[in-house]
Image (cartoon, rainbow, N blue to C red; front, side, top):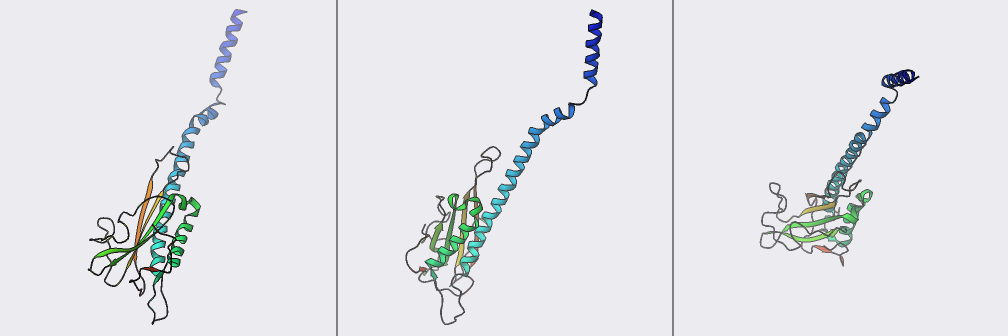
Length: 214
């Protein structure tokens, strides 16, 4: 009887050793966490890249739209920039970022780079929009910009009698999965465009109180 029991156990062990039915499930269970982590990380990186690109597009769009303010077909009138027009441009920039809640976590700073009466580059006026608390890297309205505005190697200067619309955009990135895969980071993008048409620069921004003051 004892020998029979040993033989039965030995046969059972041999059968277990030959049984491969659970191997795939076991391999899948071991590999699943790795593939899940890689998938989530890839999703985070792709989303981060997309938001970074959209922040850059906001900067370009605001610079482009602000450079067109005041264009007119009336050759006898040199247009000025109004607070309503500036507010409209800034609202458009915020609207572009609605899908990732840009207004709550971002900031748009629009500066008019011009030449003053002493032939110095300076910020004539500046307007801001967005709830993020951050100041311009180039100072406030009235700041003298000896070498123009821009990062080293990419400085821009306003020609005589014209203005450059210089835009800074800041955004505190909101990760999809918290800080599991990426650290909290701030995107910073800049864009600049020369005013497209004649513009009366002397009065700065006209038309009442600003709703986009910095």
